[in-house]
Image 1 (spheres, rainbow, N blue to C red):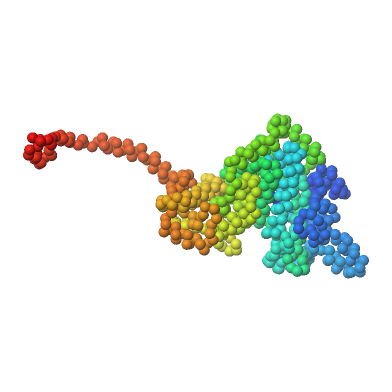
Image 2: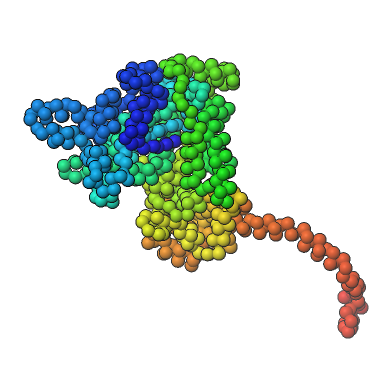
Length: 611
């Protein structure tokens, strides 16, 4: 997952240089950066991003202390010392020389009395994005062999690079105008990022936690002809953190599966909440051994959630739950005072601790069991993505979870859907955007101001508006967690889409309690919005519907059918009792006698023979 925090002048810069750059430890005053990193047992930071060429840096270069101080601490060119020295030797004015080394607007401008709302404005210098793989990846990295360790670190590098590239190309924007109301894309997706790798968690006892601190500089180039410098929009980046998090996990899963042959499966951490994807086959007990810090956070979160419910009278929503989790993490955050050790020594300590607790067989066969479990997962899960089914699943979950939403909410859920369906198999580039565009075109309508939208129930239920009563009770079951309600709604809609497709294939007659999805083809692709009305009219004329394939508790029809079945024995017993109470009918006349009022035919016996 990705967590974020902004750093500003003062405490933020001190934390960056005394903590993040040296493994979250404590850097003694006067100690050189490289010496402090060697002592802490962490590798030096490296530069990444497409904006490095504009400041004379190359991806993979080591982050020096002076470069970080100039660029990340003051917003100046990382080679500002040389630039100023050459300009002064040429006889330039000192004020102009200082200005020549600044990228964009100087941070001193925000502190000037002439600046509008100067007292209210505190400039931020960058954003610290922390990339953490799932817990089972930490376990395999710490307890597996050297080959698995190197491959997992490579997968981490690739996933982080691809996610930062997406943020620079598709998300990052430059602020301009009064109050930053105008936005423009960054030139060539050019972010400047310093990445620092850490190995341990903040738990009291040393536990493995492979994670990267990606410190994104606020400075970026505008897309104008001169390539002037400006400041990134912080709110734009912050609003897309969840979408970036799901994309990072999707990339990491694909790299691990392609290089190690491991598969992934969902693990439910909290009943009724979103599951997390973990490497299949790794003993779940090792997660509790590794994530002692998580246990501390969950205990604090339980107390904070109870206080929230008591104060507001209801359970926290998704946004409030995230804020409570951040408070729980801050409340339980211990100071880092561990004895620094190199990674090789840490791996030996972790292995000894795990072997003492679970036995050598569990640790030695970790990779072997992961490969065996992957074969079972690959045989059970088909690597197919149906765009129409994915769109229905995404819109149902986001609608129930949020009500009104934006495009980046759909994008995050579409990537979660792909990670669950593919289980580590590669996805076609742009497939997540295709799913989102299908949702926007076919299943949403605008609401409120700006880019907000909500689900279009008339598109989900095109014929019989009475069927909307099937979805609404599912979304209002307050006794269930919010995500559990979202899954019930998504499963109900997908069941009806399967029924409509089966009806289209078999050409069966229409039956009640079915929902036809217009324009659903066998390939899973949907037509555009202008074609939907024609499809609906044609379906209304042909009536090509079928009964639902399965009965679930998520539908009112199933409840009605179950009640009817329970009443059948009662009706049978009542009918039998009524039959016993009625008087017996008169005995029928003998077959050889004619009915009353009918004379026998002359010349024949009553039996019909000749006389």
